[in-house]
Image 1 (cartoon, rainbow, N blue to C red):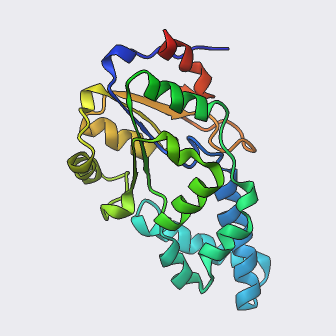
Image 2 (image 1 turned 180 degrees about the vertical axis):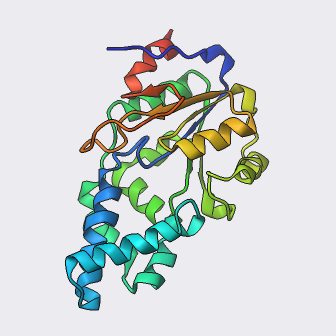
Image 3 (image 1 turned 30 degrees about the horizontal axis):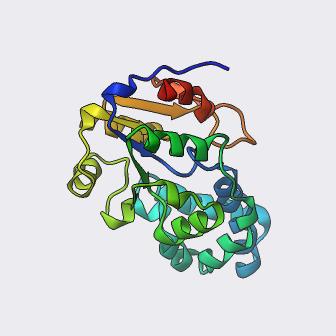
Length: 224
């Protein structure tokens, strides 16, 4: 297995994204790209093709905004019970390899480990209930608590007011290039992308960032 060396003595805080980073993005991709359009077609008497086009038109208009991630917003906009629909396909929620082990080892090594996600609180609650990962974090932060998505620079200053991390001594792992770039611009020194957020799809373009395939690639160095 390949190794991704990290300067662990220089890292005090580990900030981790949820969807696509700790959890397989297949659940979310299937939900928004397949399940919701099908339900939208049923509700509004549209063909599958018409519903897909209309859903994606609405999605794309909100890309990069907090509404894009908001369960309540889409419930209203699509006239669908998004929270209930998410529960109907919750069996698809799955954890990427090595994640619980990595979280345990990071904390055992004295690192502060925080989940930092754009997921709405209702989606976050469902996923923590299904995976039990919440017990491994020192803190859990949803961008909805700040009124700012992680893609935007002011988010990181707002986060720092409640999660007092030193950017120069912080590692962020996230599957979103806009988020990684915003964090880099804020001064977060250690950044990792994710090669395959959705295990059913091909590798993602990770741009200028180093990227992991599984958390075991950084655990041996952590143990050392």
